[in-house]
Length: 220
Image (tube, rainbow, N blue to C red; front, side, top):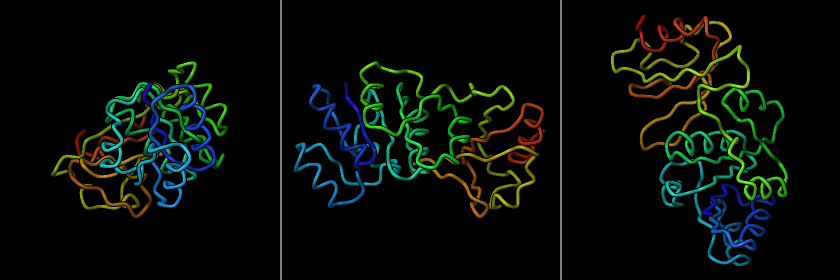
């Protein structure tokens, strides 16, 4: 299998070492030059220098042909962005993500992460067993109380140019991710700006889907 590991720290490097020993083709994406050099020195030319959350780096790594993507950086935002684009843009079947801060577990779960890990052995075991439950489809949430809604922002939508804090979002609604063509995914904060053609992925309750659509697109 071809496996891309984003994050060349202790967890990522250990998983790469074991998987290479098992005969898999591995690419480790690491943004720190010294760490990438160290990985290449130890494991051969398997490290790609770059930010694994950026689309052009993911393309350079060959994510379009990856059998498995492992997001195991020390930054949960990066892991979430990598996992989402691996699934939605590159159609990777098996995606495994590391959660560093337990407070972020709920958003990972809401976005369909039924399989999260923190240990090197868990990564290797998951890949060897070809775990396919790493990411479910966007509409299949663990909790039936919430749904994922995906909206493309029209050019004339009233929210274009507004920040997230300016939006009249319904209760119990969170904007989880913004996808832009040829740009890295963004986990929006209060000051994030909405642009035309943005793909907004939000977590909300079924009874608030209409209000969310109205707030984002201006369409009833």
